[in-house]
Image 1 (cartoon, one colour):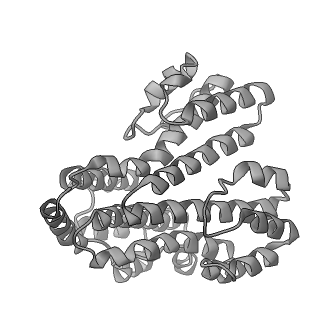
Image 2: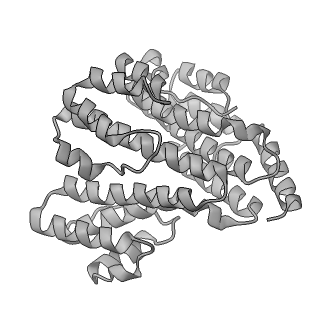
Length: 324
């Protein structure tokens, strides 16, 4: 892609960044009396389809569609963005394997806005045509399918596919010429492994379980030290993290579970924020996509809190940091 193509694409994104939600707007949403008032405020800012039907889930789905429409229109090379659909692609595989092996059908569990739709993935699994899957996905699919079929261990099935998804994301990052994709992959895998360590410590999982679950290829952490820390206790995890580039996670971990989850997402926003000053690469487009996904997730957290009668303080503890 030449410099002129970058210039036009980034100019489009820069104009759209002005409509991203700020921390002040998020605070307004948290302080709103209820879900209806939140939806009205979002509608005033252009969220949704412009209709009067204030349905939370439909509004969020509409915003997700809008985001990808912008990327498809602005990006000169869409292949760069394939890595951002891997989570949905591997989710479809996981859901299809569980439906086939358990013979239980569930509504609305698949994503259709990725390389292989839920319907197609279900056919692939039903016919055991795993060779039709991309990359190294066939091996993970066969392993997860056989494991669930013979052990009925749904968690182990999840572990196999989730690890394969992380490995696929990291592989794309390693091969990418774009720094932001490399940074995205590194942060995604490292944070996922840290989350696995934390959850394993809470549930008393073994070293063997953690080794099977963690991707382990992120250069910014040592899974050997992370696993040993998890076996020793939560304080040991915090102590290990304090000596890495993820030291803020140690403080969040000591604060509360919700503070830790918030930090995990905030770390990604901090990773992409330097792209605000980059005008001649794909970086600002990738940053815009991540920023939009982050604000949609945050709005979902707020709306869910309002629906369930959580206090403003409890909701505020869970909201994510905004890009702008």
